[in-house]
Amino acid sequence: MPESLLQVLRRLPSTSVYFRYNIPDPTSCEARSLIHRHVFHNDQLLPVEKVRLSPGQAGVVNGWGLFTTLRIVRGEAFAFERHWRRLEKDAAIIHLPMPYAGPRVRVQLQEVIRANKVTDGCARIYLVYNQVGFWRSDEPLPAVDLIIYTAPLPEYHQPIRLAIREHGRHAASPLTGVKTISWLNNVWSVAEAQKDGFDEVIMLNERGEVAECTAANLYIVKGDTVFTPPLSSGCLEGVTRSILFEIVGEAGAIVKEHTLRIEDLYSADEVFISSTNRNVIAVGEVSGHKFGNAPGPVTLRMNEAFTTYLNDYVTRRLAAASR
Image (cartoon, rainbow, N blue to C red; front, top):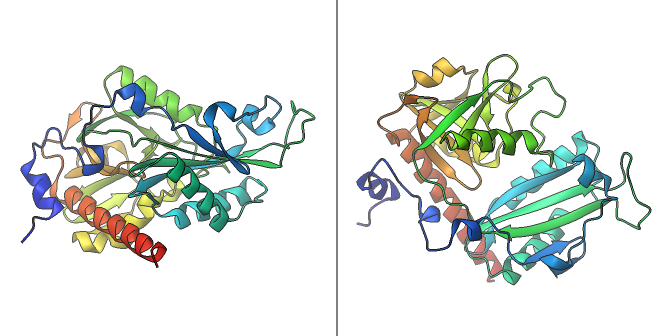
C-alpha cells in the first residue's frame, strides 16, 4: 500500500521539512522573487515592459484597491471561486466599482497561466480604483484597472520562527479584514523581523490579542482541538482558513474560534500557520519560546487533509475542462 503524505513527512528530519511544492531547486532566490513575463492588463495580454500604470491613477498613488493571491497547481487556479467572492465582498466594503465578472476574469487568468507556461506557481489579481481622490490625470482611464500576473511559488522551510509586533492590527477599523493594496504595514513588519532572523510576525491588535501573521492565519493546538483567533481580532478571513474549517474532521480534530493571547501560544502543544502559498506550516519558535516537536501530529494531519482537498479540487477541474 502506498505511503500517505503524513507517513512520508514523519520520516523526514523535523528540523527542516519541505512540502512538495517547496522542494529546493537550482533557481536563484532572486529569480524566484520575479514575476513572469506576460501580464494581463485591463483587456489585453502584454509583455511586462509594455504594461503602463500612470502616476495619474489615484488608486495607485493612494493605495485604494484590492488584491488576492492564488495557488496555481497543475496549471489550474486553486479555489478561484472563493478568492473572487472575497474580492466582491471587499469591493462592496470600500465602495470600489466592480465592472469585471468572475467567470471572465478566470478565463483571463488562464490566458496568463498558459502564456507564462506555469504548471505550479502563484498568481495575483489586482483591482485598482482610478477615479477617486486627488492627484488624478485627465487620461482616459477605466474606473478600475484589472491586473493579473503570475510568479514562481516562494520557497518556505519548516518549522518557522515568529516574531511579535504590538499594535500590528487595529480590530476596530472599518477596513479590518479587507485585503487592500495598502500593504506597507505588512511588508515592513516582516522585513524588520527578518533582519533578526525570524520568518514571519505575529500581529497583535490594540487589545493585545493575537490577530494573525502579516500574510497568514495563525492556529494553536491543545490535544486534538485547534484554536484560531476570531475575525473580530482583526484577522483576514483567509481562503485556506475557511477550507480548514470545513475539512478539520478529516484530520481527526476540531477547530474553534477563540480569543488568544501570547501566553496561549506558549502553553500550546503545537502552533501552525496557513496561507495560500504555504498550505499548513509548523511553527518552531515564537519570539524565543521553542516548540521541540514541530511539526506536531495535528499539524501534519491538517496539512495532509488540506493537500488531499487541493488535489481533489484540481483533478475535478481538469477533468471537467477535458470534456
